[in-house]
Image (cartoon, rainbow over all chains, first blue to last red; front, side):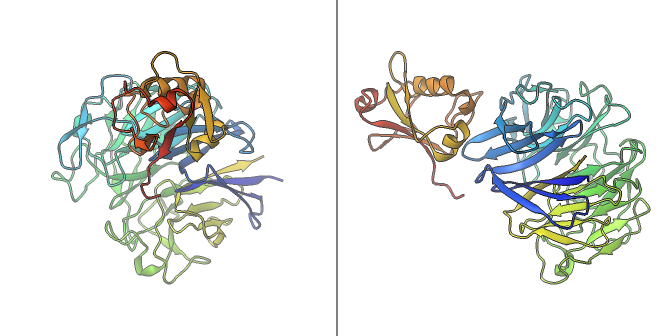
Length: 371
Length: 98
């Protein structure tokens, strides 16, 4: 019988949550790398036994771990994330120029067809690639050296590449999202990049529809419709049907259009999930009710999903990389909170159960559908 | 041989015990000791000093003979008891929240 393995990165280590296809009973293992921040854990679509993990610490810097046996054992691999060209400067919070400086790996995006190939989105904002299982890394420097780079500013969490999408129909087409610069698109496998933010409007920047400077929190797509992208922005939920050339708002009847994660159903390209948060300064659900909102029509019309989720006194957040979907027949949805709960829905969001409740602050959630 | 004590998280990362012995060629300076530590245990590269600049990471401290050597220049020769192997150099994760 098929099963799932949920890979959870937290402020103090990683955890794996496994279940069979019913997704009713769970085995929780961890912490792995206890005491370290694990920003992201990602399995290779080409080989479920291959898993990459970003282990980082203010004290001890960046470590990259790789497992070749489904997480039973781990090996430290390369951590030399060296910018390929002279770094120049971006803007600091106070508007002064600041040299690019590597801090950590936020997001790992393994290749769909080669277990040894993986992209890494890092802080300060840049994209790296490894073709040898993470042993060595080379920067795709065209992103960092994009002409608007000197004007980029960090978001509150740092100036990071937090989302990396590879077009399943055309692997030369990449999208990344940077806080707080926006979306960038490459059509030549990462050699050159251009901003892809037309249609975004952001309060809090001098020119609300500027080419760059938007605090994009997350973008997601369905593999069967590669030109359609969904975005959760600092404020506003957005949609593009031309691979990021233009965006339109689909916040519709959401109780708040502020939030961090966004995910798409594995089998229904127009079914989208968000977790509304009260506001930019109140990072918790409106009215203390933890609700996932689902649109079955590609946005604008949203329904609250509440069964099994706390509907009183819930003041947690769900971070940008902390929501994922499995690809079983009845699509499973998973998300982790800053309060340490990981919730699972085996029925596309209709009902929810907390797999585990008291982990450290959850930074990321990914899921592997196992054969 | 000199003795170096490394913090618990780096012991785990490199599968080492608390204290290790290092052969440092030439004058036993902070920098040569760090070089020898990284050369012998490559997995520690980038964990206690920056891979590009070679600077000590902000939350790492170097102590020896009850003195804080963290802010000394890289070519500082370690105290005699350390170079003679009677006292260890301590590589310490700073007390800084957690």
